[in-house]
Image 1 (cartoon, rainbow, N blue to C red):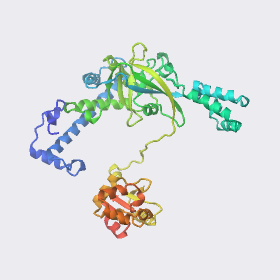
Image 2: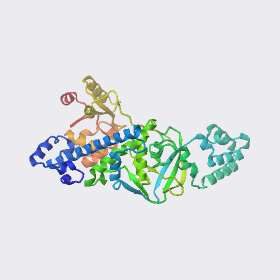
Image 3: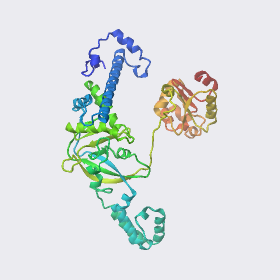
Image 4: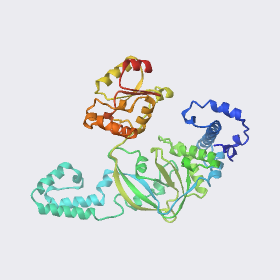
Length: 473
């Protein structure tokens, strides 16, 4: 941090001349923030300066993007004059990464029920059942019909020879390994240009291959539905691919690259931003991809819009004669569960107030917890309730609460609980270290005394009305 004023990109700090007194005065404003409590004044100063600088860079890049997007969408679709394009050209060398020969990517495509029952393996299974149960008039859909299979089981009852024969045929079928279990190579690939629809990176009629670094992200990009099936094609890179990388991780940042990283991050957000059907909103990213392709790149890499940890890779050339990839296999997956993360938008809430809300950890069936909860409600004290068993306190939480409480560690144990007695902890705890006791508490919430209140630096264990009135009101 101390040498940040020497960086090439920091035009503000290059010209800054700061006295020691000014640093101390500036840093004193931030000393109440937990993140800076162990920093000296000079480090705090330069850390905040870096943060401000990055915010300026992000703001300026956002304005450049907005201007570029407006021009492409409404004024000059094919030959925009934008400072943003110059910035892309300037940072292209730093943004270059290589996806190496042999690396694997994944492409997802809808796999309908009709596709499933046309599948060679499904048809083969159907033929086995037709041959063995000719009187039942089986068809392909009956293979996954529970009632039909129950009837077949009744017919098999006592006929061990037929059961053995059917089992052998099915085993032979399943052991017949092949590369493509879903769509074939052609149908697992990017669509032909004539069928290419408008996309985030490609205009209608120009086909690009949209892939992901992992199977789950590839499926999430399809906006999946429960029990729906998806064909997952395995994409193998057959020669090193030159990729414009919009992703980054903090450990990659070098001292002279702060502004480059900020630019990449800001533009990457445009590729990761969901689009809810307005095709004109694709125009800026489509043009940018075309521009990057003309700079000699084989594709781009950017963060997924639907997966917090996922990464997408887009490959420009889908011509079988010149492209950098091959389709080497396919499998079919179904979606078993869907999970979403939600947050309230309206009515708006004070973020600081929400963050500082008290944590009330309890076991709902416990009469003392019920009494404590009633007391909190009567005194209009807001809190976030947490079930002590369903969300067991972690080792780190317990260690922190113990440190803040000023209590002995034994006070955190539910000494009247059945589990405490069954484990004979009255005799065992004195022989255990504090570390071992905290680890033990973290294994089962029923060992922890409740209710437990955490309110900033205040930690209360058990319900004592006078103590709660003094420390919580």
